[in-house]
Image (tube, rainbow, N blue to C red; front, side):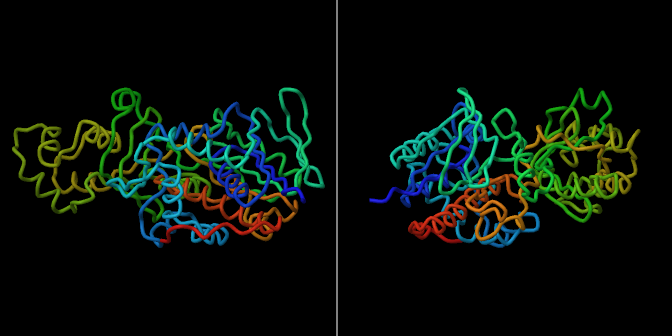
Length: 414
Protein backbone atom coordinates (compact mmCIF):
# COMPACT_ATOMS: atom_id res chain seq x y z
CA UNK A 1 0.00 0.00 0.00
CA UNK A 2 1.18 3.54 -0.71
CA UNK A 3 1.70 5.77 2.28
CA UNK A 4 -0.82 8.56 2.97
CA UNK A 5 0.30 12.07 2.00
CA UNK A 6 2.30 13.75 4.74
CA UNK A 7 0.92 17.15 5.69
CA UNK A 8 2.46 19.67 8.07
CA UNK A 9 0.32 22.37 9.64
CA UNK A 10 2.17 25.20 11.34
CA UNK A 11 0.01 26.88 13.96
CA UNK A 12 -2.28 25.22 16.49
CA UNK A 13 -4.96 27.88 16.52
CA UNK A 14 -8.47 27.58 15.04
CA UNK A 15 -7.34 27.77 11.40
CA UNK A 16 -4.54 25.24 11.79
CA UNK A 17 -6.53 22.76 13.84
CA UNK A 18 -9.55 22.96 11.56
CA UNK A 19 -7.51 22.39 8.41
CA UNK A 20 -5.72 19.51 10.19
CA UNK A 21 -9.08 17.93 11.01
CA UNK A 22 -10.33 18.20 7.44
CA UNK A 23 -7.14 16.82 5.91
CA UNK A 24 -6.84 13.96 8.38
CA UNK A 25 -10.46 13.02 7.74
CA UNK A 26 -9.63 12.95 4.01
CA UNK A 27 -6.79 10.48 4.59
CA UNK A 28 -3.65 12.58 5.10
CA UNK A 29 -1.10 11.95 7.84
CA UNK A 30 -1.14 15.31 9.60
CA UNK A 31 1.31 16.78 12.09
CA UNK A 32 0.63 20.16 13.68
CA UNK A 33 3.57 22.23 14.95
CA UNK A 34 3.28 25.23 17.22
CA UNK A 35 5.74 27.43 19.10
CA UNK A 36 3.64 27.50 22.30
CA UNK A 37 3.49 24.78 25.00
CA UNK A 38 -0.17 23.89 24.27
CA UNK A 39 -2.71 24.32 21.44
CA UNK A 40 -5.63 26.73 20.99
CA UNK A 41 -4.37 29.20 23.58
CA UNK A 42 -5.87 32.31 21.99
CA UNK A 43 -9.20 30.54 21.40
CA UNK A 44 -9.33 29.53 25.06
CA UNK A 45 -8.59 33.09 26.12
CA UNK A 46 -11.31 34.46 23.83
CA UNK A 47 -13.72 31.91 25.28
CA UNK A 48 -13.51 33.43 28.72
CA UNK A 49 -15.89 36.10 27.51
CA UNK A 50 -18.34 33.68 25.92
CA UNK A 51 -16.64 32.51 22.69
CA UNK A 52 -18.51 34.41 20.01
CA UNK A 53 -18.18 31.88 17.17
CA UNK A 54 -20.11 33.62 14.42
CA UNK A 55 -23.15 35.82 13.75
CA UNK A 56 -26.71 35.12 12.65
CA UNK A 57 -27.04 38.01 10.16
CA UNK A 58 -28.34 37.32 6.64
CA UNK A 59 -25.70 36.70 3.97
CA UNK A 60 -25.40 40.19 2.47
CA UNK A 61 -25.33 41.98 5.81
CA UNK A 62 -22.76 39.50 7.10
CA UNK A 63 -20.48 39.83 4.09
CA UNK A 64 -20.69 43.63 4.24
CA UNK A 65 -18.83 43.54 7.56
CA UNK A 66 -15.57 42.67 5.80
CA UNK A 67 -13.41 45.49 4.45
CA UNK A 68 -13.24 45.29 0.63
CA UNK A 69 -14.20 41.60 0.68
CA UNK A 70 -11.49 39.82 -1.40
CA UNK A 71 -12.71 37.20 -3.91
CA UNK A 72 -10.81 34.37 -2.16
CA UNK A 73 -12.48 35.20 1.13
CA UNK A 74 -15.87 35.76 -0.49
CA UNK A 75 -15.80 32.27 -2.01
CA UNK A 76 -14.56 30.75 1.26
CA UNK A 77 -17.41 32.30 3.25
CA UNK A 78 -19.98 31.05 0.75
CA UNK A 79 -18.50 27.55 0.86
CA UNK A 80 -18.36 27.51 4.66
CA UNK A 81 -21.10 29.82 6.00
CA UNK A 82 -22.12 30.39 9.64
CA UNK A 83 -24.60 27.50 9.53
CA UNK A 84 -21.73 25.13 8.70
CA UNK A 85 -19.67 26.39 11.64
CA UNK A 86 -22.64 25.93 13.98
CA UNK A 87 -23.19 22.40 12.65
CA UNK A 88 -19.50 21.61 13.23
CA UNK A 89 -19.71 22.81 16.84
CA UNK A 90 -22.87 20.79 17.40
CA UNK A 91 -21.06 17.74 16.04
CA UNK A 92 -18.53 18.16 18.82
CA UNK A 93 -21.33 18.05 21.37
CA UNK A 94 -21.38 21.84 21.76
CA UNK A 95 -24.63 23.17 20.27
CA UNK A 96 -24.91 26.93 19.81
CA UNK A 97 -27.50 29.61 20.48
CA UNK A 98 -28.18 33.10 19.11
CA UNK A 99 -27.86 35.90 21.66
CA UNK A 100 -29.99 39.02 21.77
CA UNK A 101 -27.42 40.88 19.63
CA UNK A 102 -27.51 38.19 16.92
CA UNK A 103 -24.13 36.82 17.94
CA UNK A 104 -23.72 33.04 18.13
CA UNK A 105 -22.23 31.31 21.18
CA UNK A 106 -21.81 27.72 22.38
CA UNK A 107 -24.47 26.82 24.92
CA UNK A 108 -21.68 26.20 27.43
CA UNK A 109 -20.74 29.86 26.84
CA UNK A 110 -17.03 29.11 27.01
CA UNK A 111 -14.32 27.56 24.86
CA UNK A 112 -12.84 24.86 27.05
CA UNK A 113 -15.49 22.13 26.51
CA UNK A 114 -15.36 22.65 22.74
CA UNK A 115 -11.56 22.59 22.68
CA UNK A 116 -11.43 19.39 24.76
CA UNK A 117 -13.87 17.65 22.41
CA UNK A 118 -12.00 18.97 19.39
CA UNK A 119 -8.61 17.74 20.57
CA UNK A 120 -10.13 14.33 21.28
CA UNK A 121 -11.50 14.20 17.74
CA UNK A 122 -8.12 15.18 16.28
CA UNK A 123 -6.39 12.49 18.30
CA UNK A 124 -8.92 9.96 17.02
CA UNK A 125 -8.06 10.99 13.46
CA UNK A 126 -4.38 10.42 14.13
CA UNK A 127 -3.35 14.09 14.11
CA UNK A 128 -0.03 14.62 15.93
CA UNK A 129 0.57 17.80 17.93
CA UNK A 130 4.18 18.89 18.34
CA UNK A 131 4.60 21.85 20.68
CA UNK A 132 7.46 24.29 21.34
CA UNK A 133 8.56 24.30 17.69
CA UNK A 134 8.97 27.70 16.01
CA UNK A 135 9.13 27.86 12.21
CA UNK A 136 12.43 29.46 11.16
CA UNK A 137 12.99 28.31 7.57
CA UNK A 138 11.35 27.14 4.34
CA UNK A 139 13.54 25.29 1.83
CA UNK A 140 13.14 25.40 -1.94
CA UNK A 141 11.78 21.83 -1.91
CA UNK A 142 9.13 22.75 0.68
CA UNK A 143 10.92 21.26 3.68
CA UNK A 144 10.43 23.25 6.87
CA UNK A 145 12.93 24.04 9.61
CA UNK A 146 11.88 24.49 13.21
CA UNK A 147 13.70 25.79 16.26
CA UNK A 148 12.92 23.26 19.00
CA UNK A 149 14.12 22.74 22.58
CA UNK A 150 16.59 20.14 21.31
CA UNK A 151 17.85 22.36 18.48
CA UNK A 152 16.97 22.78 14.82
CA UNK A 153 14.66 20.21 13.25
CA UNK A 154 14.12 19.75 9.49
CA UNK A 155 10.76 18.33 8.41
CA UNK A 156 9.81 17.16 4.91
CA UNK A 157 6.21 16.86 3.77
CA UNK A 158 4.02 16.61 0.69
CA UNK A 159 2.22 19.87 1.49
CA UNK A 160 2.18 22.38 4.32
CA UNK A 161 -0.27 24.91 5.69
CA UNK A 162 0.84 28.07 7.49
CA UNK A 163 -1.73 29.28 10.01
CA UNK A 164 0.42 31.54 12.16
CA UNK A 165 -2.10 34.20 13.12
CA UNK A 166 -1.59 37.95 13.17
CA UNK A 167 0.50 40.01 15.56
CA UNK A 168 -1.99 41.26 18.12
CA UNK A 169 -1.55 38.58 20.78
CA UNK A 170 2.22 38.02 21.20
CA UNK A 171 1.89 36.32 24.58
CA UNK A 172 -0.49 33.80 23.02
CA UNK A 173 1.96 33.05 20.20
CA UNK A 174 0.74 35.51 17.53
CA UNK A 175 3.70 37.87 17.27
CA UNK A 176 3.90 38.38 13.48
CA UNK A 177 7.46 37.07 13.38
CA UNK A 178 6.61 35.07 10.26
CA UNK A 179 6.56 38.26 8.14
CA UNK A 180 10.37 38.39 7.96
CA UNK A 181 10.53 34.75 6.91
CA UNK A 182 7.92 35.07 4.14
CA UNK A 183 9.28 38.38 2.84
CA UNK A 184 12.67 36.72 2.42
CA UNK A 185 10.94 34.09 0.27
CA UNK A 186 9.39 36.73 -1.97
CA UNK A 187 5.83 36.55 -0.61
CA UNK A 188 3.95 39.83 -1.11
CA UNK A 189 2.69 41.19 2.21
CA UNK A 190 0.56 44.13 3.31
CA UNK A 191 1.96 45.77 6.44
CA UNK A 192 0.48 44.46 9.68
CA UNK A 193 -1.69 47.06 11.40
CA UNK A 194 -3.88 47.08 14.51
CA UNK A 195 -7.56 46.30 13.96
CA UNK A 196 -10.40 46.26 16.46
CA UNK A 197 -8.23 48.56 18.51
CA UNK A 198 -8.87 51.38 20.93
CA UNK A 199 -8.34 55.04 20.03
CA UNK A 200 -6.34 57.60 21.98
CA UNK A 201 -8.14 60.87 22.64
CA UNK A 202 -5.93 62.91 24.98
CA UNK A 203 -8.36 63.16 27.89
CA UNK A 204 -7.68 65.66 30.62
CA UNK A 205 -6.11 63.96 33.64
CA UNK A 206 -9.21 64.52 35.79
CA UNK A 207 -11.58 62.99 33.23
CA UNK A 208 -9.34 59.95 32.73
CA UNK A 209 -8.98 59.44 36.47
CA UNK A 210 -12.70 59.72 37.21
CA UNK A 211 -14.27 57.89 34.29
CA UNK A 212 -11.88 55.24 32.94
CA UNK A 213 -13.82 51.98 32.91
CA UNK A 214 -17.25 53.64 32.50
CA UNK A 215 -19.43 52.72 29.49
CA UNK A 216 -21.09 54.93 26.93
CA UNK A 217 -24.15 52.87 26.03
CA UNK A 218 -26.29 53.09 22.90
CA UNK A 219 -24.21 55.70 21.10
CA UNK A 220 -23.68 56.33 17.40
CA UNK A 221 -20.18 57.20 16.20
CA UNK A 222 -19.22 58.73 12.84
CA UNK A 223 -15.94 59.29 11.07
CA UNK A 224 -15.13 60.04 7.44
CA UNK A 225 -18.55 59.04 6.15
CA UNK A 226 -18.65 55.79 8.15
CA UNK A 227 -20.86 55.19 11.19
CA UNK A 228 -21.50 52.53 13.80
CA UNK A 229 -23.91 52.13 16.69
CA UNK A 230 -23.33 50.28 19.91
CA UNK A 231 -21.35 50.69 23.09
CA UNK A 232 -18.00 52.30 23.79
CA UNK A 233 -15.88 52.06 26.92
CA UNK A 234 -13.95 54.99 28.33
CA UNK A 235 -10.32 54.09 29.02
CA UNK A 236 -7.46 56.08 30.51
CA UNK A 237 -6.20 56.64 26.95
CA UNK A 238 -9.44 57.13 25.02
CA UNK A 239 -12.22 54.80 23.90
CA UNK A 240 -12.60 51.10 23.12
CA UNK A 241 -15.58 48.84 22.40
CA UNK A 242 -17.66 47.47 19.58
CA UNK A 243 -18.73 50.80 18.07
CA UNK A 244 -15.09 51.92 17.93
CA UNK A 245 -13.81 48.59 16.60
CA UNK A 246 -16.26 48.68 13.70
CA UNK A 247 -14.60 51.90 12.51
CA UNK A 248 -11.00 50.68 12.80
CA UNK A 249 -10.19 50.92 9.09
CA UNK A 250 -11.75 54.38 8.71
CA UNK A 251 -9.86 55.70 11.74
CA UNK A 252 -6.53 54.33 10.51
CA UNK A 253 -7.10 55.63 6.99
CA UNK A 254 -7.98 59.10 8.20
CA UNK A 255 -4.87 59.28 10.38
CA UNK A 256 -2.67 57.97 7.57
CA UNK A 257 -4.00 60.13 4.75
CA UNK A 258 -4.93 63.34 6.56
CA UNK A 259 -2.67 63.20 9.59
CA UNK A 260 -5.67 63.62 11.87
CA UNK A 261 -9.04 62.11 12.66
CA UNK A 262 -12.17 63.23 14.47
CA UNK A 263 -14.81 61.04 16.04
CA UNK A 264 -18.31 62.49 16.17
CA UNK A 265 -20.48 60.91 18.86
CA UNK A 266 -24.25 61.09 19.04
CA UNK A 267 -25.19 60.41 22.66
CA UNK A 268 -28.94 60.08 21.89
CA UNK A 269 -29.18 58.56 18.39
CA UNK A 270 -32.86 57.65 18.79
CA UNK A 271 -33.88 61.30 19.28
CA UNK A 272 -33.46 64.14 16.80
CA UNK A 273 -32.11 67.50 17.85
CA UNK A 274 -35.52 69.12 18.00
CA UNK A 275 -36.90 66.46 20.36
CA UNK A 276 -33.86 66.80 22.62
CA UNK A 277 -34.23 70.60 22.69
CA UNK A 278 -37.91 70.31 23.64
CA UNK A 279 -37.07 68.04 26.56
CA UNK A 280 -34.35 70.38 27.75
CA UNK A 281 -36.66 73.40 27.45
CA UNK A 282 -39.22 71.70 29.67
CA UNK A 283 -36.80 71.20 32.58
CA UNK A 284 -37.22 72.96 35.92
CA UNK A 285 -35.30 76.27 35.85
CA UNK A 286 -33.80 75.72 39.31
CA UNK A 287 -32.24 72.34 38.46
CA UNK A 288 -28.51 72.19 37.82
CA UNK A 289 -27.47 71.40 34.27
CA UNK A 290 -26.28 67.95 35.34
CA UNK A 291 -29.68 67.29 36.92
CA UNK A 292 -31.46 68.50 33.79
CA UNK A 293 -29.45 66.16 31.57
CA UNK A 294 -30.00 63.26 33.94
CA UNK A 295 -33.74 63.80 34.36
CA UNK A 296 -34.71 64.72 30.81
CA UNK A 297 -32.30 62.55 28.78
CA UNK A 298 -31.00 59.90 31.23
CA UNK A 299 -27.41 61.03 30.68
CA UNK A 300 -25.07 59.78 33.38
CA UNK A 301 -22.14 61.55 34.98
CA UNK A 302 -19.72 60.17 32.38
CA UNK A 303 -21.81 61.48 29.47
CA UNK A 304 -22.12 64.92 31.07
CA UNK A 305 -18.39 65.01 31.75
CA UNK A 306 -17.75 63.93 28.15
CA UNK A 307 -19.81 66.86 26.90
CA UNK A 308 -17.72 69.21 29.03
CA UNK A 309 -14.53 67.54 27.82
CA UNK A 310 -15.55 68.10 24.19
CA UNK A 311 -16.76 71.67 24.83
CA UNK A 312 -13.52 72.56 26.56
CA UNK A 313 -15.41 74.56 29.19
CA UNK A 314 -18.92 75.29 30.49
CA UNK A 315 -21.83 73.80 28.58
CA UNK A 316 -24.38 76.03 26.84
CA UNK A 317 -27.67 76.41 28.70
CA UNK A 318 -29.68 77.25 25.58
CA UNK A 319 -31.66 74.08 24.69
CA UNK A 320 -30.97 74.23 20.93
CA UNK A 321 -27.22 74.73 21.38
CA UNK A 322 -26.96 72.01 24.03
CA UNK A 323 -29.01 69.61 21.90
CA UNK A 324 -26.64 70.23 18.98
CA UNK A 325 -23.66 69.33 21.19
CA UNK A 326 -25.34 66.15 22.44
CA UNK A 327 -25.95 65.09 18.83
CA UNK A 328 -22.41 65.91 17.72
CA UNK A 329 -19.71 65.44 20.36
CA UNK A 330 -16.48 66.01 18.41
CA UNK A 331 -13.38 64.24 19.79
CA UNK A 332 -10.01 64.67 18.05
CA UNK A 333 -8.13 61.35 17.76
CA UNK A 334 -4.48 61.60 18.78
CA UNK A 335 -3.59 58.02 17.86
CA UNK A 336 -4.60 54.38 18.06
CA UNK A 337 -3.59 51.72 20.54
CA UNK A 338 -0.54 49.70 19.44
CA UNK A 339 -0.69 46.41 17.58
CA UNK A 340 0.08 44.30 20.64
CA UNK A 341 -2.93 45.86 22.41
CA UNK A 342 -5.38 45.28 19.54
CA UNK A 343 -7.90 42.45 19.29
CA UNK A 344 -6.94 41.51 15.75
CA UNK A 345 -4.62 42.35 12.86
CA UNK A 346 -5.17 43.96 9.49
CA UNK A 347 -2.69 43.25 6.70
CA UNK A 348 -0.70 40.10 6.08
CA UNK A 349 -0.27 37.83 3.06
CA UNK A 350 -1.83 39.60 0.11
CA UNK A 351 -4.42 37.64 -1.83
CA UNK A 352 -2.63 38.40 -5.09
CA UNK A 353 0.29 36.40 -3.67
CA UNK A 354 -1.91 33.28 -3.83
CA UNK A 355 -2.13 31.00 -6.81
CA UNK A 356 -4.77 28.33 -7.15
CA UNK A 357 -6.80 28.10 -3.97
CA UNK A 358 -4.87 29.30 -0.95
CA UNK A 359 -1.45 28.16 -2.20
CA UNK A 360 1.43 30.64 -2.23
CA UNK A 361 2.32 31.32 -5.86
CA UNK A 362 6.05 31.55 -5.15
CA UNK A 363 6.15 28.55 -2.81
CA UNK A 364 4.35 25.60 -4.43
CA UNK A 365 2.95 23.20 -1.88
CA UNK A 366 2.76 25.86 0.86
CA UNK A 367 -0.74 27.12 1.71
CA UNK A 368 -1.96 29.89 4.01
CA UNK A 369 -5.12 30.36 6.09
CA UNK A 370 -6.54 32.42 8.91
CA UNK A 371 -5.61 35.82 10.25
CA UNK A 372 -2.21 35.93 8.56
CA UNK A 373 -4.07 36.66 5.32
CA UNK A 374 -4.83 40.28 4.40
CA UNK A 375 -8.45 40.67 5.46
CA UNK A 376 -10.20 42.66 8.17
CA UNK A 377 -13.51 42.45 10.02
CA UNK A 378 -15.01 43.75 13.27
CA UNK A 379 -15.68 41.70 16.36
CA UNK A 380 -19.04 39.98 16.60
CA UNK A 381 -18.22 36.53 15.22
CA UNK A 382 -16.84 37.68 11.88
CA UNK A 383 -13.20 37.04 12.85
CA UNK A 384 -13.63 33.39 13.78
CA UNK A 385 -16.02 32.71 10.89
CA UNK A 386 -13.47 33.87 8.33
CA UNK A 387 -10.71 32.01 10.13
CA UNK A 388 -12.59 28.72 9.87
CA UNK A 389 -13.80 29.44 6.32
CA UNK A 390 -10.29 30.12 4.98
CA UNK A 391 -9.01 27.01 6.74
CA UNK A 392 -11.74 24.93 5.08
CA UNK A 393 -10.89 26.43 1.68
CA UNK A 394 -7.15 25.87 2.11
CA UNK A 395 -7.73 22.27 3.24
CA UNK A 396 -9.92 21.63 0.19
CA UNK A 397 -7.23 23.02 -2.13
CA UNK A 398 -4.57 20.94 -0.42
CA UNK A 399 -6.68 17.80 -0.72
CA UNK A 400 -7.02 18.41 -4.46
CA UNK A 401 -3.27 18.87 -4.83
CA UNK A 402 -2.60 15.67 -2.89
CA UNK A 403 -5.17 13.59 -4.78
CA UNK A 404 -7.33 13.12 -1.69
CA UNK A 405 -11.12 12.90 -1.82
CA UNK A 406 -12.84 16.29 -1.51
CA UNK A 407 -14.45 17.20 1.82
CA UNK A 408 -18.05 16.19 2.29
CA UNK A 409 -20.59 18.94 1.45
CA UNK A 410 -21.17 21.38 4.29
CA UNK A 411 -24.21 21.04 6.50
CA UNK A 412 -26.24 24.23 6.35
CA UNK A 413 -26.35 27.21 4.01
CA UNK A 414 -26.91 30.92 4.46
